[in-house]
Amino acid sequence: LETVERAAEPGARPRLRTLLGSFLFSGDDVDKKVAVLSGGEKARLALARMLIRPSNLLLLDEPTNHLDLASREVLEDALDEYDGTLVFISHDRYFINRVATAIAEVGRGRALLYPGDYDTFLEHQAALASAVVPSADAASAPDGMRESKRGAKRAEAEDRNRRYKERKAFQDKIGPVEAEIEDLERRLGEIEARQADPELYREPARAKEIGREKAEIQSRLDRLYTRWEDLAAERP
Image (cartoon, rainbow, N blue to C red; front, top):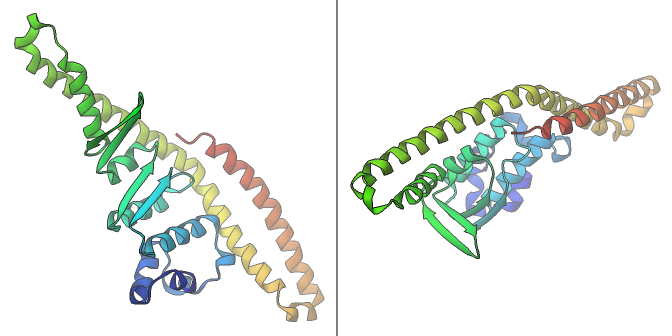
């Protein structure tokens, strides 16, 4: 809460708890120290700070990379509420369709802007491709164009379904790893905060036990980080 307060204008402070709630920080979670947050939680906090600032332009490069499904949904909802101009690069077609209101096609020394989402852009491209018809077939051109559009829509729908299934299978594998990392990082933060308290060392046996637990957690985290990196390389 203190972190977003420092980034916000005074007039925005009454709604900061609501903002944090939309980023999955609720109740006593808003009083946590940033140091004890997991990687995913820190990413959500950074997004919250970014959106509470009165900027009128955001430039985002692959904003959904390394976010789990819940964090992606939070980001999409937050960007829906954003009133400024958003320019982003993404390979995530679902995210593009969810957020974009125009598509910029860059190539051959020029940039062309098409209104609409990614599906609309593909339909436009398919229509352009089918518009070049030999004169002898001019009478059948409209029917051919409509059929081409329908074919493009079917192909894109099949592609979206395939990508959704791939993302779902990927999340089923990486989700448990991320959840365990988050739990262990939280516990590691608690231990480090405990070790910073001089009172702990009045009980040598307890201090030793906590040190041993910390070493075990760190060892487990190292293995999980390696596993996460291997899985992330398979991200569809």
